[in-house]
Image (cartoon, rainbow, N blue to C red; front, side):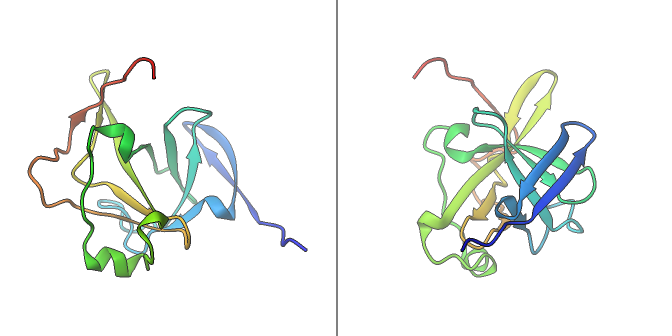
Length: 147
């Protein structure tokens, strides 16, 4: 017999009401840089597109996210042992990488320097700072047409 999953209702000033189940809640043990006091977030896909909303389980804090493979060609990096331990990562396949999207003067930018790392198995997350000058905080997002 399947256990019923609990549903959390999130009231967002920007996005309306979300009903999320526990499989969409991620715990960030150290929070997100600048928002260290907030630890639990719902990861919600925006309709059928590539964008996601990461919304605080309580309060109004939210971020627009994009999977890392959509952000830039050949975007990749190695995470350090402290993140592997913090998120209890057992297999590379268990990890999903997202970048934060910002809108500045009607232009979309992604933060390639500080992606969010998600362990989809235990639903833990962390922000990781990449020690590589070639990854900027504000990388223009280019929308590609067609396949």
